[in-house]
Image (tube, rainbow, N blue to C red):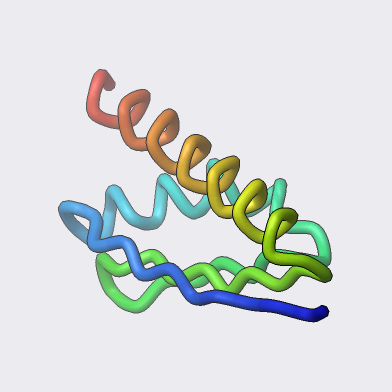
Length: 74
């Protein structure tokens, strides 16, 4: 079963959003498409199963969280 979801993450500002996107975009591969709409990070995630989708969403959110924390410390 093919499944998908769209995440919208409102980051603090356009500059932070751009830095987070640059940090995580390299891991998008074929199953995630990340883009920005101002300070909103949008991720369209596709998978062949619900469990795989949940795993990908979890990994993606972890990467966003780490990138955001690193950017805040600088």
